[in-house]
Length: 242
Image (tube, rainbow, N blue to C red; front, side, top):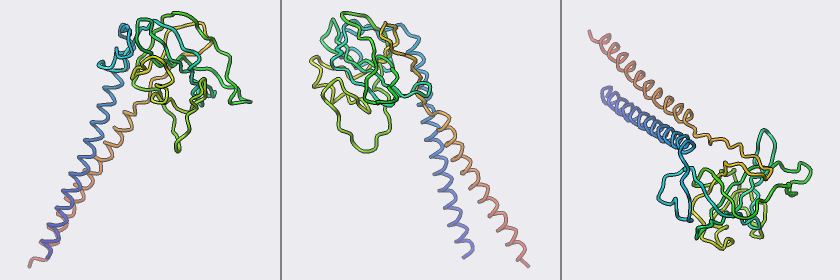
């Protein structure tokens, strides 16, 4: 009976160790993927910009990607993303479709940040609206940064409007030109009063490394306890032998 119990306990310990190691490996792989994404972001910021001349220009390319575009803003289709913080101050991201001059197509551009009126949150700040054909540079991304959203919020389709998060699918029927499947975070300067101090996203590499360390430590602990129990069992067995 004792041998059977020891065998069952040993098998359970082996399975627990294997599970902990597998979870540690998974977190290690996630950390490696986040490191690769962070390096891709840094490399994109340093590369020469790719000229975007249609809404499908980057669909087959890796993102993020530094880009150069020529065209004009459709300011009447602007979306103001609320509750965006900069240096502890609440404000808006101003997001506007950019109609490509060599099209066909349009690209959503996050033009920059402006402070919100602390007394009246729905009062839009005074910003510049560049007119005519212009050239801008930026970083092409898969999507704009999103805030936590509890439940579904109705999207105001009467633009310009204030949105909590940007919904590119809701935007498509509101723009006359075909809309790209990527967005651009503008980095080039222009006289519009907006701030463009972009912060790289938190990739969470250290978090995954921490989780991996915890799982590997648990595997070592289970193994050590298993060895200790086996040794104690052997000692007791020998002590009972006449």
